[in-house]
Every structure is written in structure tokens, then in C-alpha cells.
View 1 (cartoon, one colour):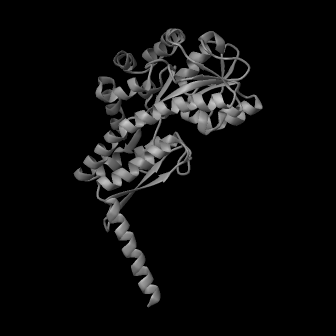
View 2 (cartoon, one colour; view 1 turned 60 degrees about the vertical axis):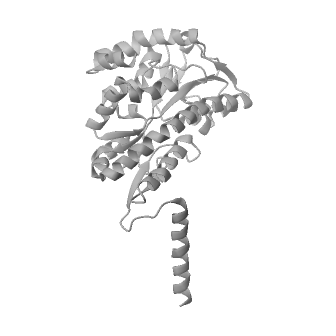
View 3 (cartoon, helix red, strand yellow; view 1 turned 90 degrees about the vertical axis):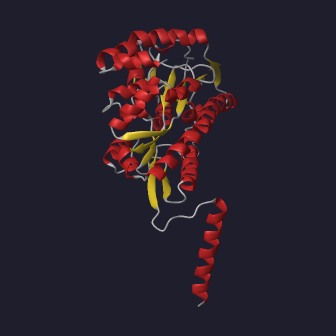
Amino acid sequence: MKTYMKHVAIILVTVMIWGLIGIIPSANARELRISHQFSEADARHKLAHEFAVEAEKATGGSLTFKLFPSKALFKPKAQYDAMAKGALDMSVFPLAYASGKIPELDITLMPCIIDSVDEGMAWRNKEIGKKVEAICEKRGMKIITWLWYAGGIGSKEKAIKVPDDVKGMKFRAAGKLFEYMLNQAGASITSMASSEMYMALQTGVLNAGLTSAESFVSYRLYEQLEYFNTPEKYSIWYMAEPIVMSMRTWKSLSEKEKNAVSETGLKLEKRALEIANAANSKATKVFSEAGVKVHAMTKEEWQKWRTLAEETSWKRFAEKVKGGKELLELAK
């Protein structure tokens, strides 16, 4: 009897808490799985968690969400196939990771195609953004919350400010078109996940690399680097990493759930912009405090990179990708 009463008390307290926070799960609530590659300390994980909480409230508890950070469920690039097949519901997903099967998505990791996170976030309401959304939906995933991140350039031995500085450097480039551009400028390229950069820098496999500002901090790369070109003012590296949903999952939702998910995703974009810009400032602060020599890229330096990008990556994308020239024109 005591055990029974204890269980009843626990249930009543739980229901009271749900009521206070505005969530009463349905008896047949559906759980959606959100997978991503980032650590729990990463702002992208925190944004995904915020989405899950708000979307659950907005659906009145008919949808619940379970997060799988740090590649716990799928490897980073495998997440696209999983969503396309309906094996994964949602992800915080760098769109260019799917460019092996959807080459057009390399436009979302194109050297110097934008010059600020704000410009990238504005894509949602521009023709280029609508084009990218249509391409994604046709190929199995829907953008729920636009999110762009800026990246910096970290190096050992010498600072990298302009294209001539990369000659002879062993680089992790983060993206096929960045690999091509830097290789054309004289760097040797080694492909790897950003989570592998620390060891590669420590062992001499790399002496320079590109990745997002958030990853530079969360993977503690300041412990291995001597120089950091911060993206706080200008950057050559911007990447679209939105919260996305499998189209199979999307189509299975009720109209009420679709509206709730869409509205939650849109509301989060202001927060997404804030955390992306905050990541740049945080990287500058953390690297400076760690004794790394920090440089803020100037507009003149950025323009030199832009000229190189136009002559290499942009040209290659326009020639090799069907519809690439049109996407470049829209993005410019």
C-alpha cells in the first residue's frame, strides 16, 4: 500500500510540474530524435536543446525530443542519409556535409561568398535562401532554423593573414572548395573532422587549420596554436549549419504540429544570430587570454581572399556543378 501511494504521489508531482511549465504530454506523445556532432558544451547543442523545449511546449506535448550530441547516434556526414531514409528525425547539420550527394549545397560553405553572419542569416528571406531550402526539401530534409557560423584561421610557426601566407603550410581546410582554393595557393591539405585537429596539431600532421569559432574554443585548439585570425570582424569561412528535419518526419506531422515546429524554428533565429556572433567574440577573448597572438582580419585582407576565391573555388563551382553559376549569382 505504501509503495502504491508513493507511486501515486510521484505521478501527481510530475503532472503538477508539467502543468507549471505548460507541457502536458499526450498519452500517445511521439518522440523525435535529434542528432548532431557537437559537444554538450557547444552553443549549437544548447540551441538544439532550446528548440526541443520550446517545440514540445508549442505542440502541447504531442511531440517530445531526445538529443544525441557528440556523434552518439550517427557520424556527422551519415546524418543526411539517415534523415533521407527516415532513420533520423532531426539534426543540427552543416549542409555542405551532404554536398557529396547534393553538390549544390557547397554554396553554403563557399569561400568569401558572404562577409558576415548577419548576411548569411538574411538568406532565409532572399531568393538564394529559398533556392537552398527547395533543394534541401527535394532531397529529403527541411530547414527549420537557419544558423550560420563564422570560422577562423589558426596556425603554428607563422600568422596567416593573406593568401600568400599559406604557401608550404599543412592545412585542415574544412570543405572541398576551401581545400581546392588553399591548395591552389600553395598549401598541402589533410582532410579530417574538426574534433581530430587537436591531435593533428600536437603531432605535426597539421600546422594550420580552418574551423568554426565555436569549435576552435570547444576543442581547446588554443592549447596547440600560436596564431589565430579571429572572425570577429571579417572571415573567409562561413558555414550554414541549420536545424533540419527529415522530410519523411515532416510529412508525418499533423498540420498543428507543423505550424508549431515552424513557428518555434523561426523564433529561434534571433537567438541563433546572437549565439553565432557571440561565438566570434568569445573566441577572440579565449585565445587572447591563452596567450595566442590574435589578429582581426581587415576588409583589405578579406578582399585579397575574395579575389583568390573568385579565381579558384567560384570558377570551379560554376563549371562543375549543375546550376552552380545561377546559385553564385543569387548568392552574390
